[in-house]
Image (cartoon, rainbow, N blue to C red):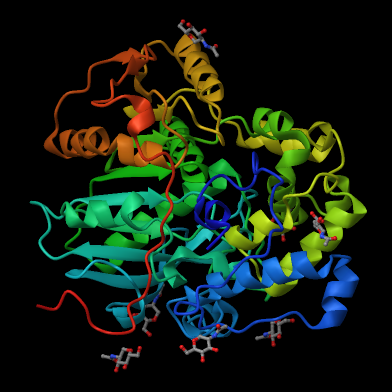
Length: 474
Ligand SMILES: *[C@@H]1O[C@H](CO)[C@@H](O)[C@H](O)[C@H]1NC(C)=O
Ligand SMILES: *[C@@H]1O[C@H](CO)[C@@H](O)[C@H](O)[C@H]1NC(C)=O
Ligand SMILES: *[C@@H]1O[C@H](CO)[C@@H](O)[C@H](O)[C@H]1NC(C)=O
Ligand SMILES: *[C@@H]1O[C@H](CO)[C@@H](O)[C@H](O)[C@H]1NC(C)=O
Ligand SMILES: *[C@@H]1O[C@H](CO)[C@@H](O)[C@H](O)[C@H]1NC(C)=O
Ligand SMILES: *[C@@H]1O[C@H](CO)[C@@H](O)[C@H](O)[C@H]1NC(C)=O
Ligand SMILES: *[C@@H]1O[C@H](CO)[C@@H](O)[C@H](O)[C@H]1NC(C)=O
């Protein structure tokens, strides 16, 4: 695939996506079971040319070919049909539905892991009870006491079909959940509100509140609680781990823990986090169109009457409508939002943006437990300087926090999870073992690479492909 860079970056939306797209993409024939093509009127009304339409269609077919279920979540009864006793009056964290043993034949999870999906009650940023979905990935042979890790994924997109529980590789595959399950942890991973389940109790659309860190933190805590109800043998104690959008979620969860403690929480691993979305958006400028679109979509549910045109130009709004209409996710976003001229300059300073950013910000606040922060210094998506600042602000205001900060020279956004894998696996093990945490805040430790930095594979340049025939069977 020519544009492999665009199709494999699991990054925080498109913030620093380069605008070199629109060479024509070539579908990989053996994985592209989906056959979507745009009806010409849709191309016309979106105001895009045939080459961009082609590229968006290729990206969409790539995404659809990676669904683990035959249909969109919008017509999959697991996500659309709530049991009769589910209602908005159930407390958050309630288990609404359990699929105990998911048929994994169409997933590309590691052999000897097992999967379950649940629906559970969570709350929106403004406290409304809504249903949401999550997956649970089980090891064959759990570590003693069946320890649970809550996992918060990075950007997958803004629309219902971007739910990791309905993707063959669970979106973050070996980056985190597969690695954890193979190490003996049971992984509980919320899709986040609006991804997967897309209708609330009034049958209104639930829009994914992209980067609404406190809402994602609620999704995490409540998914863990519901999973523990579904599977009583799981440990009551748990650690949270998140990357990028999910790093923002876990940092926010640690802050929530300082004021609304949840029993059993042992600490959080925060990698390449979304801490200050304002600084991210402002720093990206015109190149942040994908992010502007995702946040605009979110704010339609947060501020009544909000219109996407506050953030997006007329052309940007047309692209947004196109992508929402086809249910595009990260690969589609990377194609559709790579141009300049799609955002309103200074959208990050508009009042809805400023209010939302203040509301959802991480850093400078108390932490309710130990936190490990991991950051690559060559992160092209979340600049290391922003993480430095959020750590500094936290440590200046709360010097007694137990915050360990580790930096990985020369490492980019998603690769940070790979570079730091030994550290976070050890850290999680120490929390479950009850190893005392050394207090101390913020002094960044730099890890030395074994080989010169430039010798390392810099980016993920592969995806897990579904095998149509047996292999490695003998
Ligand atoms: C994919 O391969 C099959 C047979 O191998 C062929 O019939 C089909 O035309 C190919 N499709 C594309 C889009 O190249
Ligand atoms: C089609 O549109 C894209 C994105 O707007 C642009 O980069 C490209 O140059 C256009 N291609 C043609 C052939 O006009
Ligand atoms: C809903 O009903 C099912 C039985 O149909 C029961 O197993 C479940 O516990 C009930 N859930 C709640 C939240 O009451
Ligand atoms: C799982 O799904 C496959 C189709 O993908 C089907 O052939 C198989 O019978 C299913 N297994 C069970 C146990 O339902
Ligand atoms: C919910 O709304 C959708 C979209 O308007 C509609 O297709 C569906 O029938 C509605 N479902 C119920 C139960 O009313
Ligand atoms: C709260 O959020 C829900 C959807 O998330 C929305 O329908 C409702 O209008 C919001 N309420 C207020 C008071 O903003
Ligand atoms: C964070 O604190 C360190 C140590 O005090 C300092 O060297 C660094 O410049 C600060 N970084 C930012 C972005 O504030």
